[in-house]
Amino acid sequence: MFDINPRGRALLEFLSTTDLEILNQGNEPTFINSNRRKVIDITLGSFSVAPEVQNWQVSDEASMSDHRTADEIDLAVALLQEAITSSYEENCPEQQTKKYKGAPWWDHYGKSEEND
Image (cartoon, rainbow, N blue to C red; front, top):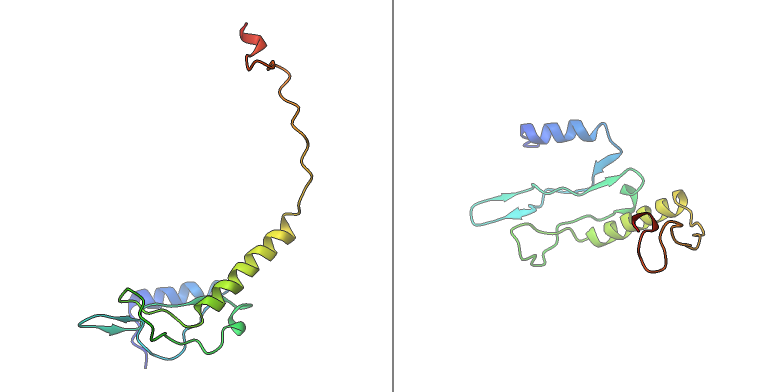
Protein backbone atom coordinates (compact mmCIF):
# COMPACT_ATOMS: atom_id res chain seq x y z
CA MET A 1 0.00 0.00 0.00
CA PHE A 2 1.21 3.50 -0.83
CA ASP A 3 1.46 6.26 1.74
CA ILE A 4 0.02 9.19 -0.22
CA ASN A 5 -0.66 12.50 1.51
CA PRO A 6 -3.18 15.12 0.30
CA ARG A 7 -0.52 16.87 -1.82
CA GLY A 8 0.31 13.55 -3.48
CA ARG A 9 -3.37 12.93 -4.23
CA ALA A 10 -3.68 16.43 -5.70
CA LEU A 11 -0.62 15.77 -7.87
CA LEU A 12 -2.06 12.47 -9.12
CA GLU A 13 -5.35 14.19 -9.92
CA PHE A 14 -3.50 16.92 -11.82
CA LEU A 15 -1.37 14.42 -13.75
CA SER A 16 -4.51 12.58 -14.85
CA THR A 17 -5.45 15.73 -16.81
CA THR A 18 -2.07 16.02 -18.58
CA ASP A 19 0.12 14.10 -21.00
CA LEU A 20 2.56 13.35 -18.17
CA GLU A 21 3.22 10.27 -16.16
CA ILE A 22 5.46 9.39 -13.25
CA LEU A 23 8.56 7.50 -14.40
CA ASN A 24 9.81 6.45 -10.96
CA GLN A 25 10.07 2.70 -10.45
CA GLY A 26 10.42 0.94 -7.13
CA ASN A 27 10.40 2.43 -3.68
CA GLU A 28 14.04 3.37 -3.14
CA PRO A 29 14.20 6.62 -1.13
CA THR A 30 15.06 9.73 -3.14
CA PHE A 31 15.50 11.86 -0.01
CA ILE A 32 17.74 10.79 2.86
CA ASN A 33 18.89 12.77 5.89
CA SER A 34 19.77 11.87 9.46
CA ASN A 35 16.20 11.12 10.51
CA ARG A 36 14.17 10.49 7.33
CA ARG A 37 14.25 8.23 4.28
CA LYS A 38 11.42 9.14 1.87
CA VAL A 39 10.41 8.82 -1.75
CA ILE A 40 9.52 12.46 -2.35
CA ASP A 41 11.16 13.26 -5.69
CA ILE A 42 9.50 12.27 -8.93
CA THR A 43 10.58 12.13 -12.53
CA LEU A 44 7.87 13.11 -15.01
CA GLY A 45 7.74 12.35 -18.71
CA SER A 46 5.22 12.63 -21.51
CA PHE A 47 3.51 9.50 -22.77
CA SER A 48 5.74 9.63 -25.86
CA VAL A 49 8.97 9.84 -23.81
CA ALA A 50 8.02 7.37 -21.08
CA PRO A 51 8.69 4.20 -23.12
CA GLU A 52 12.25 5.43 -23.75
CA VAL A 53 13.03 5.57 -20.04
CA GLN A 54 13.75 2.02 -18.96
CA ASN A 55 15.45 0.76 -15.82
CA TRP A 56 14.78 3.97 -13.91
CA GLN A 57 16.51 3.73 -10.56
CA VAL A 58 17.85 5.92 -7.81
CA SER A 59 21.59 6.43 -8.11
CA ASP A 60 23.99 5.37 -5.37
CA GLU A 61 26.39 8.16 -6.37
CA ALA A 62 26.81 11.16 -4.06
CA SER A 63 24.70 14.11 -5.16
CA MET A 64 25.97 16.86 -2.83
CA SER A 65 22.41 17.04 -1.47
CA ASP A 66 20.03 15.01 0.67
CA HIS A 67 18.16 14.35 -2.59
CA ARG A 68 19.48 11.48 -4.68
CA THR A 69 19.50 11.52 -8.49
CA ALA A 70 18.02 9.04 -10.93
CA ASP A 71 20.48 7.10 -13.09
CA GLU A 72 18.49 7.55 -16.28
CA ILE A 73 17.98 11.28 -15.82
CA ASP A 74 20.70 12.07 -18.39
CA LEU A 75 18.85 10.02 -20.99
CA ALA A 76 15.58 11.70 -20.11
CA VAL A 77 17.19 15.15 -20.39
CA ALA A 78 18.65 14.29 -23.79
CA LEU A 79 15.28 13.04 -25.03
CA LEU A 80 13.55 16.16 -23.75
CA GLN A 81 16.10 18.43 -25.43
CA GLU A 82 15.68 16.52 -28.67
CA ALA A 83 11.88 16.79 -28.47
CA ILE A 84 12.03 20.54 -27.79
CA THR A 85 14.51 21.14 -30.61
CA SER A 86 12.58 19.11 -33.18
CA SER A 87 9.31 20.74 -32.14
CA TYR A 88 10.89 24.18 -32.56
CA GLU A 89 12.37 23.30 -35.95
CA GLU A 90 9.05 21.92 -37.21
CA ASN A 91 7.00 24.88 -36.00
CA CYS A 92 9.40 27.78 -36.51
CA PRO A 93 10.98 27.44 -39.95
CA GLU A 94 13.98 29.58 -40.74
CA GLN A 95 13.24 32.72 -42.71
CA GLN A 96 15.48 34.98 -44.71
CA THR A 97 15.97 38.32 -43.03
CA LYS A 98 15.87 41.51 -45.00
CA LYS A 99 18.82 43.83 -44.88
CA TYR A 100 18.15 46.77 -42.65
CA LYS A 101 18.24 49.97 -44.70
CA GLY A 102 17.81 52.31 -41.77
CA ALA A 103 14.93 54.49 -40.79
CA PRO A 104 14.11 57.17 -43.41
CA TRP A 105 13.73 59.87 -40.75
CA TRP A 106 17.23 59.28 -39.28
CA ASP A 107 20.27 60.81 -41.00
CA HIS A 108 23.75 59.30 -41.14
CA TYR A 109 24.92 61.39 -38.17
CA GLY A 110 22.45 59.75 -35.80
CA LYS A 111 20.22 62.82 -35.53
CA SER A 112 16.55 62.93 -36.21
CA GLU A 113 15.67 65.29 -39.07
CA GLU A 114 12.44 66.09 -37.27
CA ASN A 115 14.34 67.54 -34.27
CA ASP A 116 16.56 69.95 -36.25
